[in-house]
Length: 372
Image (tube, rainbow, N blue to C red):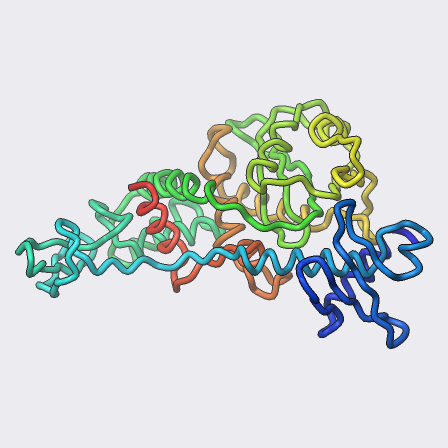
């Protein structure tokens, strides 16, 4: 029996109810799959010990140990889940008093906003966290961003807003994207996604200023969370170690399995960045992938398809560090729901829950508050 098949059977055990009983933090009982017996799985200083014959005589990590390890990971994810809620600021912006009342409506060029009066300091103010001094409302700005990152061009987005009697230029939409991408990126860098132990990596060629470039991406297999990215000049000889190092910074760990195509730069980066003599720290690198069967990189190809659809509308990017790629990453992870994830976002599966009818506004508000 191969280790991979034991891992699969261990996962099958965790998917059934009442198969694992927690005695204490170091002792678990796992039901046998072929009889009415129960096996003891005990945590020791040298690792897990199981009372089954497979572990005792073959000295391998059996399916019962894998089941306990998987259940512990699930438990850990639940405990570490982060919830980001819309901000409801009901305090005076001058004295922080909550003794405030509504005091009319202030009309801007393109929208109206509620005005409040503080009965303690007798000052009027409005609350528009993250969108202060903007000529368009938060709903208009985030609708424009949503339109753009679901396939529309800047000019088509501008034309849509004109139908809503919002007079702006396509350059204004671009400025919104730059401003809020930078704001959200700084905020989200402080949050660690809870990803699995199997990652995938691949490259996609893009045109930047008419020149061919390559976008390297690292993605979690289970949650489809886009972990890290790197724009480079070449495909086979480019040093992709920064991508590997950035992935560790984002997740705080290394994977146990890495799936890539056969390019040598992935193999070299794997050896130089993730090589270890310790068995429990080794990263298995699967290089020979196929279009059919279990050794494929179809999930990465789907991510590449998202970028390709966006690139067709843009014609090409203007510079290597374009905020478009970063905001595409944010949109993929936190905004866009995926059918393969039962209409969850990758962030949902990675323990980061974004609440609110408009997730763009939720992120922008929390990012603004965190940076103040």
